[in-house]
Image (cartoon, rainbow, N blue to C red; front, top):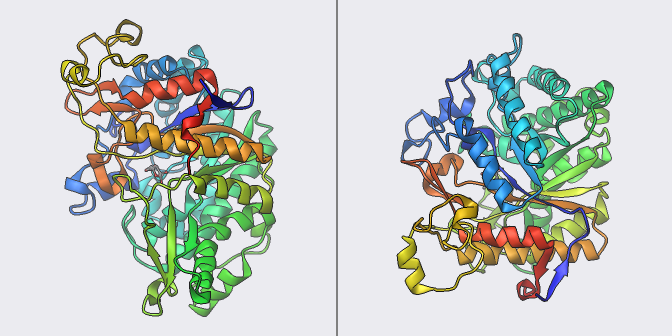
Amino acid sequence: MAGKQFPRGFLWGVATASYQIEGAVAEDGRGESIWDRFSHTPGKTWEGDTGDTACDHYHRYAEDVGLMERMGISAYRFSIAWPRIFPAGRGQPNRKGLDFYQRLLDRLEAARLRPFATLYHWDLPQALQDRGGWANRDTARWFADYAAYVMERLRGRVEAWITHNEPWVVAYLGHVTGEHAPGLRDLRTGVQVTHHLLLSHGLAVQAFRELGIPGKIGITLNIQLVHPATDREEDRRAAHLADGVFNRWFLEPVFKGAYPEDVWGLFRQLGVAPRVSDGDLAVIGRPVDFLGVNYYTRALVQYDPAATETFGVRILPGPGPKTAMGWEIYPQGLYEVLTGIHRVYGPRQIYITENGAAFPDRLEESGEAAARHTGQAGSLSGSRAGSASGFSADSPVVRDPERIEYLGRHFYQAWRAIQDGVPLAGYFVWSLLDNFEWAFGYSKRFGLIYVDYPTQRRIPKESASFYRRVAEENTIDDRFAGE
Ligand code: FCB
């Protein structure tokens, strides 16, 4: 195969998050999270879907690790549900909650999968929301206490700790647009929340260093690539500002210990600048070992004076083909993001902690599929690999050529970035399994593995076989070179 080789030791992994896959929300002493409350509130999620059962991963984790093992990958990014560890958010820890992650880590170790653990992937204990949640500065301290407890208990078992997943999303979708839990709609609150999230990140990094926890620690940001819709000066200015609100607002404090002046100025003008205490920025700027980048798409930005709520910024979808989320497929943006961050912020290491795509996948009986395309080799689910995968010869199949194309082209751009000196050390595909896609419920399928929710049966898609080949060969085929 003519292809491009990744560096030796490059990690190929998959990512998930607790609330999206675990289910078992009332088991073994787990407390309520804001996503339980939100998803059970009428009208908040697609068809009222909740994470009550999700992929039942809490009970099926061993099978799920087995699927990763068969995929031949080397790392797994998962998140820890804070309300399993501290059902009330703080105070008395719940032994049984921690035990679940110990069992998961045992299974990962047996499968030689390297664990990357996210400490906060959006499931705040409801008890803390009742005290103001992330709008309350105390939550930053409670997060650091929870983080310290978990890191200490799992000391030496986790290769990399990720403090937060996508703080922009938590702050804005959770507190400004209300599309996510806790469903608030107030800009000032949202901006204050960004500061408390960042502060909590810095406090957790500090705890990690003080406790001498082995391994590394970093944060995952959703880097939203923005391009001006036209060359007009006002569109360029709007795009720069959008980049500030989405990206620089988080990157600069973490890597430079300061908020970007232009965005700060805008927030002050709007009367929503956050309250920041002396020393906060020094805490937030404590050096991290790596940056996690989640990349999915780009946005076009147009200046629109009527868009007062969004500072004159109007976001338009790009012109290219879209995924089922309506997100433009723009692989070269990954290259642009990686090289740009490397140039401006120079993190010691970068991981792509999420990248992937939703498409309207459907199950086909293998007979039906075989009649249409014979000779598909190396499938994880098809008859050839049937025995190896544990799926019988007549297992249904899921053909997802668009996902293969999406991933292949993004892998290629990651390879290009490495050629240009970006210290990219690994790549986590979102996601292992189809799962609870937040406000979209189960209507969007991101998995390499299809989940038949009524039976909880797992059926590897053809993209899982594709990914296995990429991981095994550590190579990306030249046919994905096109931008
Ligand atoms: C990211 C989230 C992840 C998943 C993907 C599609 O923003 O971190 O949980 O929902 O989007």
